[in-house]
Length: 437
Image (tube, rainbow, N blue to C red; front, side):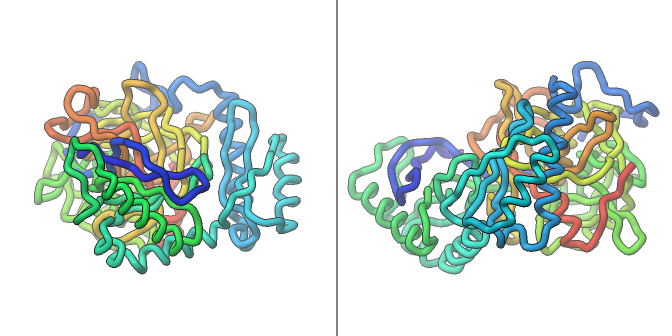
């Protein structure tokens, strides 16, 4: 992926710094294991949430329950709630808020009843204003491309209130040769364009030059009803992972990312088929497969036979720690949520994802081939809660042995940053419910 320049700002329209970034979808390959262990025991060296204490896990569950309660209240976003930054080590939360609706008092009271220490951080734009701003920007995406910036994503709700982070590629006169310093004329042109986009947005913007793509490149001998975290291969050679199962109109379905298209089979046994794409979600970038799904999830490295039972949905906030479980690379934990409104295009349309970053040096969050796989958090009772579906990667591209032990390496790109869509959003989009173990 290319190294690039960034125009950034903190509560101002534009400034100029350097960075290396990228965004991509995750398409990919295969593992080898037998039937799952009956007791669901973890393989050596694996943990549901890497090295975190039961107290931390319980605190995170409490904070996520607070978010779930807020989202269940009528018109929560329209009454000021944007999101929350969770501190599970201290059972504390920073509520990101806009305005002074009395609903805030109810939220603070409910937090206190849960034993949560809550503070309020006022943000410059409401969630509704943010969504309208992204719509205004996308409505003029062709004009901005003509002006010199081809937009591919918008990250809207991060830990810092630094404006809308708009990802894309400079083109035409605003494109600088790779490895060369940006000229004053190009710099001024970029700042002028950023100012124009900020006017359309009605707030601060950060222009980030990056690239995008999907993360597909097959835990590989599963049988129907299929478990999440499995690894599958299409007839055209595309490999993807299996997501959490959904129940729709009395029938269970295995799921995957919607950019994983074709007729799929076990990566290591082509006679066992997942079928083809049965239905696409209107939001969340997901697809139902024509095969049946079950409420269990593979976890551990890509060779694992271990599994955990799925117990329910979970809504995560900023600062929460999650795990991914892709078919190509297996489980990766200590992955911290850093943005809850990352708007991007998987090649089939725009939708909101969640951005999370690996916190352990030398470890990754995702590799190509993990697309469609589950994002989860562990529960103290040994089950897992369904958080989301792996969609892509963002950040600096990593290749080769630095990706660690995976089933299919080759030229596949891995990253310490993962983009995933909300499982609740996906289920609601289909009008379906989560299949539990």
